Image (tube, rainbow, N blue to C red):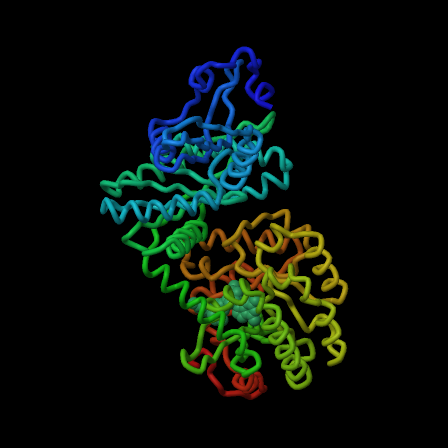
Length: 532
Ligand code: C2E
Ligand code: MG
Ligand code: MG
């Protein structure tokens, strides 16, 4: 075994001092410890590096024992060893795999968390703050989807290299998974350097990537949090940087945001809202208000939009702008949307009977409802049938975002609605992507000009030109136009002159309860809705 492991023949080593062929690479301290133990107990056991005859280093598992003379002096030391190089290599590989990302070679999540823990300890010792930077590539999924995963991988490797080039040796970059990276910037003397580095990262990451024959552009959204200023432990640090990153995404991507207390408060509110939303349906805290949509040429009303309201037992009336996004995130929007649909069509059945046979109710439908498997759109059709209502009694309001990422299943659902005679409005038109090709492709019936265009309407204004252009275009494509947020008689007059078909806004009425609208719809009603 000895000759096999070391490569020496018996003749070469016989009678010679082991030190001549045991030249390893251990430190003096390990050697001293070994000698100390041998002198004290005659025994030592441990790992040691040694060299084979051909010069190759190998790891030994070595046990020393001692045979003593009668007088207690050392007679012989006996060394027994085995070659554990293979096991050491396997251990090292496992350690590497457990701590590093195989694609980019960067530390992975587990290594990152170790380092973060170390940084916290170090910061305590040195009293120097550090920054945690959390970074997510924008629209990376599109690269993967359109160019394939190999290209996506190449981009990640390149992005990792660029990231490394932005930081100092002492800072550590890690990949948490997917397109998420972190940087720990240590030993900060002033926070300006954080600003400089994040700015540099944004610039470097957003320059074009040459992947084979494709030139690809991606950007990054970055969240920054500081220790100990913002947080006292790892979990808080991670949460903060994540929130700050989301704020950067929400504000339009390709930017960085620092964590702030108000961000934390906003998240807290959302968590409470999410919790309370769960019980809101059962406890009947929702109600639907209706806002009339007025035909401008005749002043007649045979349309209204259903707008949900939440009467919270402690917080009072909560605006849908506040809770709909939370309902979307949690998926609760599906049940809430079903409830709104159910309530609104029961109402429209009444109004068709007692007010106008063609009365139509507009119902907002979030993209999440379209994309959710559980949301059965056929259930809605069955409900209509059950009330003997034709499809025309309902108009679904969607936003441009839905059409932009429309999957086949979204397109199918829109077609099912179409076949049933349900109409479709494009809500908040002008605030999203406003891609004209979608208008044709998806068979839209109404365009709702967003209130931001209506708000500043004045003779000769740019917004008037835009409204006129939207109206002409819509009419050419066979669609009707509804102006949202009409608040003044002047806006109304300008819109009517521009050929706008319908108006909706405080000028005519705020969203009001079904009973209030009902009163107004009665033929000789004297209710002045504009004042309500
Ligand atoms: P939206 O669909 O664009 O609805 C129009 C919003 O403008 C409503 O806000 C309405 O109250 C407001 N509004 C109407 N006329 C005027 C006006 O003259 N001036 C001003 N400043 N505002 C006016 P609301 O009710 O707070 O709803 C906000 C958004 O919440 C809606 O925007 C819609 O996107 C969403 N939403 C409301 N109900 C539902 C629902 O049942 N389901 C879903 N998915 N979303 C809903
Ligand atoms: Mg709407
Ligand atoms: Mg709108």
